[in-house]
Amino acid sequence: MPFLQHLADMKLEQLALEHIVPALRDHGFFYVDNFLGDTVGRTVLGQVKQMQCSGLLNDGQLAGRGLGVSKRHIRGDKIAWVSGTERGAEAINFLLKLIDKLVSLCIGRLGKNVIRERSKAMVACYPGNGAGYVKHVDNPNADGRCVTCIYYLNKNWNAKEHGGILRIFPEGKSYVADIEPLFDRLLLFWSDRRNPHEVQPSFATRYAITVWYFDSEERAEAKRRFKDLTASSQGSTAS
Image (tube, rainbow, N blue to C red; front, side, top):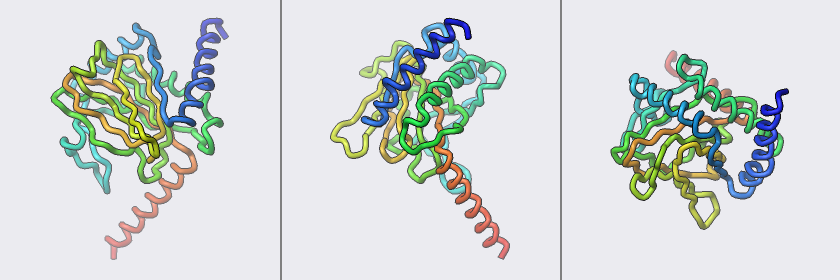
């Protein structure tokens, strides 16, 4: 292994074991700044902006039965789902692989959760017209999502002027945590009811990339429930 790669891996391991794992256990969230560095971060931002300019971002959906329902007064972002293998998403793919490696170093140290897979990346843009996302829980119904990771891409962000803060309401705590969506910041938090959160209205264009890591057992059970529900619905329709 080249020395610089070894050094990078050592730094990731130190970040995971000395900071992320203890913070998730004690507080339920953690963020790190300067995650990719300015050059790579700018490249990721450029690819996201190109996606926006190409018309690839659509209104964010609200999960429900069947298709999601667009409700801009609840959720005002525009999104696209990305695997990282698409042409023009090479830097995004680098980001995803780095987050994958970081999360893999935490596995086995986060309680009973067994993490083996994640979602595609959700590239999101709040257009800066006061759009936000009301208080919600990413995984309120045991769908398998375990850890939420958000990478922010907003240069020269001033929360007093631009808003857009992600406010976390940690379960059972007397405080809230306000996370500014600053450029090259990576945020991690539990996806379940331990961390209700909201995106406050944004008055400048606000970019972020989110991925969710799944607990294998809970994810498998959620898929079984969905399969049973689908079979039951089809049976009712047929009768």
